[in-house]
Image (cartoon, rainbow, N blue to C red; front, side, top):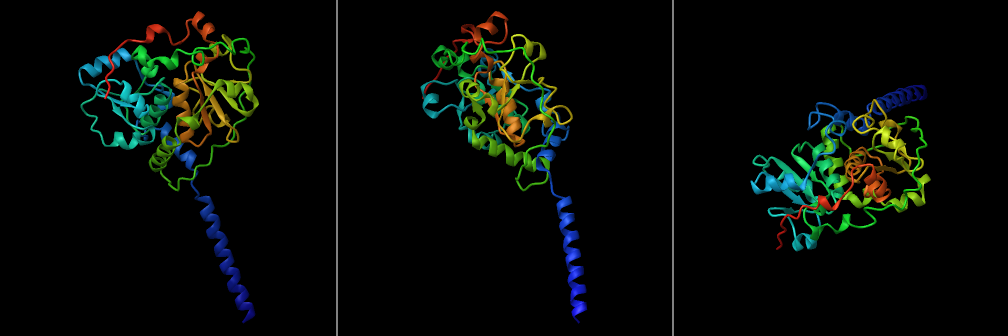
Length: 331
């Protein structure tokens, strides 16, 4: 009888181990499922948005023309107080965390484009990226934000924080190597399909907000070794005018792919992305956060660090001529 019990327990233990192993083998790598989905033609946009169309931006002049003919749907994600002081006619004031729920309830058929509007174009770029990934292919970020609409709303880009030269002497041409390829972040949405994981991550990222996904140049320069710094522009500009010391060059529309350099981004430290203006990096930071990276967009990009150098080299900079002087309406 005792031998039979031992035999039975042995069988049960073996069955348990086999079942456990089978369960482990079928555990879903959510981040991998999500990135493969977003890079495929099965995604809501039927293309790899990050490595094709990103960033999608609209100028104030183009938005004004569309708005005059009722072809634009405008979502203003600034504070209610600032919206009340002056906004674009026909704009809808929606909090960033609520933007997905809002757009899901709108019939966008009559509109040519959907413009997301913020103060500088950075938070709107973050939001536009999430909405694009969700399949809203009419969504655009208003370039330079409300700073490009009217002088009364242009104060944020007319500061030394946005157009500064504090770090011009610290930029270097010395290249830094990419990290060794590792693994993707761990996601725990509890879902198994790309679409379900995407929906869960989209709302989570929007709820976290842009404050969690942005960082100042002063903070980065004070502790450069604490961050993996991504220089998100061409190899030519990586050398001239140079880059933040230690920053690693990743080529737009090429590098951030699973079969390229995505896996060289670390999961054990914040990834700081910077571009020329902070707008494209906001798009990319949103995407990386969707995948589970602790990604942050460097506010105002190189404009806030080497503005005069960029101006002299005819690089992308905010200028007074970008302020169009269009009408504002108030409540």
